[in-house]
Length: 132
Image (cartoon, rainbow, N blue to C red):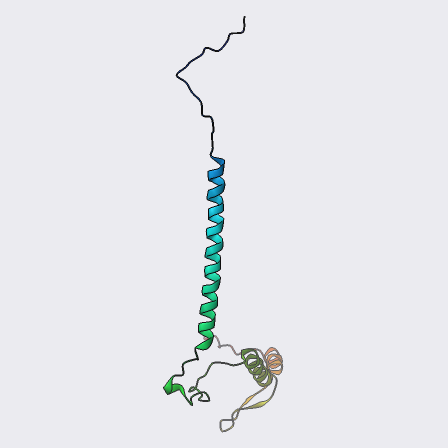
């Protein structure tokens, strides 16, 4: 086969320049300039707001003057819950490991838990008697 020459078509044209490179560079440069201006305006605006906020003094409420040392009524929130829990457990351990009166008038006493468990094992638990 012989190599054929492309046919000439005078109605078909092509673009001489696909992209206007200078217009794109100009647009990108304009965006950069606008971004720098916006950042500078915001920087100056924040400086203004910061200086204005520093000048204002804290407003005092007239009814709150002299109330700084006032304590709210009971029950108050815990200021140190870990220490409170440690104190509670120490009191409970003290009650579980010591002798003491529960009701002195009725003659009811408290004995250490280890002693109570040992006595329960020795004596056994009370049980109901079976009826014939």
